[in-house]
Image 1: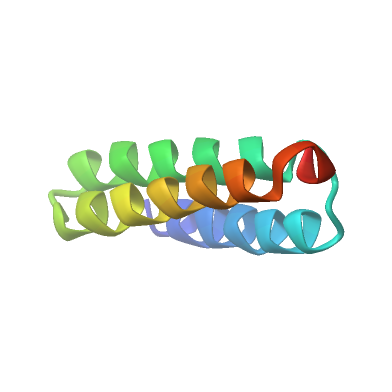
Image 2 (image 1 turned 180 degrees about the vertical axis):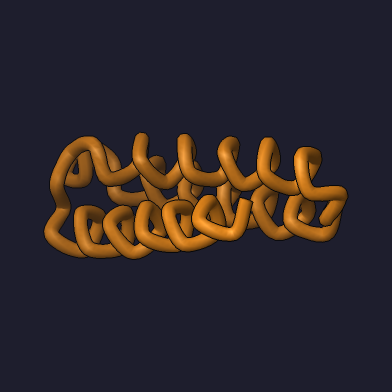
Length: 72
């Protein structure tokens, strides 16, 4: 399952790039990536990832709301 962590890291990097460019679906990629990290955490018995994924998801959502229509 080690390639999963690289794939999820790649999605996280893509999300940061998309959001930085204010591309509409960057926020969705971020929220999806956070959910996938939770799946990864359960599958690999690394439950600490769930806490970080929850924080990241909350920040993605908050920033999406803060940017308002400009970031959508």
